[in-house]
Image (cartoon, rainbow, N blue to C red; front, side):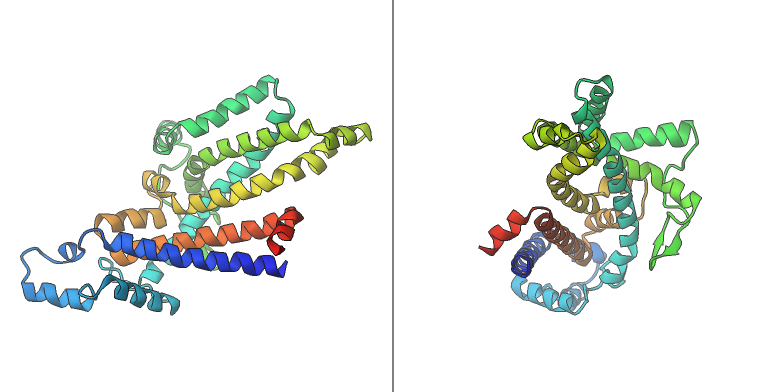
Length: 324
């Protein structure tokens, strides 16, 4: 297990370094933030002084090494627009995005896996066909359109839930979260469900496909022949054997939910990292853009690293293959 851990850790570090290079070069090749930061009528001397101050006159590789050196010391630079340390700026928005992403994945998991197992266990039932229809809807309908429909239906017409914003927050686990009060929770419901819809459809279809395959296997027939109840067959055999692909997809989708909650945060005016990156792209705030994308890379790699470890625990063959 130690060898498997070290191997995956080295792979994760290499991926982070390679992706940080691509992110840095890609962002710094787009536009010139000096044109946004100062008035077009400003003097050439002011322009040159700002270029030297921010190091734009240095070669790109030199700027990258300076950025990485500062990053290793916990310094992500200073925002061109907000004039605040990027580290503090991004992490002030991170709790909102984390709360939204975790809530969305919980909704998708707690609903998607049981519904998918039922649809695979009773594939010809009317309820199963309805469940699969909902899963197709989750894949097919654009997120922003669903968000607008939710706002129109539950906020404008029925007036049951607020249309946007985060509402009051409470200090919990060292972070400011909305789930600490009923009013804050009411602000979370619509954006979390909107973000969960695609993941819900994906998990339903994945759980159904796995259940259909496992139910026709020999060990399930043998378990039934031993007189095990259907609940034990589903719990001990079906759920255990479909857990490996579900864990893998869950890790990937959780990372993408964190990284790409931009549309939902914009539609519902949710003050998370996604809204921050959209604002930063508009004004070419390079330090925020680079720091955000590097953070996304680290989160993706970290999540996949954890998933690999869980995968190795669920399937010992993976550890044995890695040790060879």
